[in-house]
Amino acid sequence: MARLDAACTVDRYAGEGSMPRDEMIARLPGKLAMVSMVTDTVDAGVVSAGTDLRLIANVAVGYNNVDVAAAKARGIVVTNTPDVLTDATADLTLALILAVTRRLGEGERMVRRGAWKGWAFDQLLGMQLRGRQLGIVGYGRIGKAVGVRAEAFGMTVAHVSRPGSGARDSGLDRLLSTSDIVSLHVPLTPDTRHLIGQTELARMKRSAYLVNTTRGPVVDEAALAWALRQRLIAGAALDVYEKEPEVHPDLMSLENVVLAPHLGSATTETRTAMADLAASNVIAVLSGQPPLTPVT
Ligand code: DGY
Image (tube, rainbow, N blue to C red):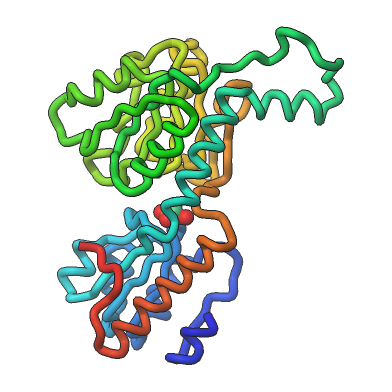
């Protein structure tokens, strides 16, 4: 904010959460740039209200909340914040993998409700990572960073790069049926919406875990709740949900699910770097320079 305030006049939303869509539409005319968060839906209607807009700077690596085609059609540049959040998101993915396979959520709840009766030889036994296969769906920056970390834990890594391109994907099928943990790192696009549904969950090993730190709608949440109830998979760890902040009620009551509140990039260092990159994009474009990280 300090960098933007020094470079331009800023109309800042001071309300709770996201700016309501009507207000966004009312406040956009006359604005040259818009800084949006993942929780702001910048659809075609909002874009068209930005009659003077040159830039939409989304403070996230994912940009499924912005209608990029509508922006491009009006000559508006869209930028995101790649790279700076890779480590934080990969770290959180490993945290979730460890949490679900070592049953940390269950253990913590047990301690907090006073139900822990002391150390026991066979208490809350989990799954060791060494020698297990991690299947990475979406092998971009974050997927690769997760793979490096997993190898440090002694896991083998399998990956598919661009699943969900229409026809049944044999690479994805093989990865699902052979992996002990499946971690999702594809962006949300029309092709990857509900990439993991009943069929895919049924392909996974009964002893396997699903981890989602990308976007909620990549997983059919109702199908996941079904698969967990049917014990078709051993557990799941989620940082993202189909209708955030709502969580499927069945997931809330299942012990073998770790639920995090969209914390992938939530470190002070990373959020500062994301904000800084978005500000740099605004300042560059408003001063006639090319954007640093355009969405292509
Ligand atoms: C992203 O960058 O896409 C995250 O989900 C927001 O932190």
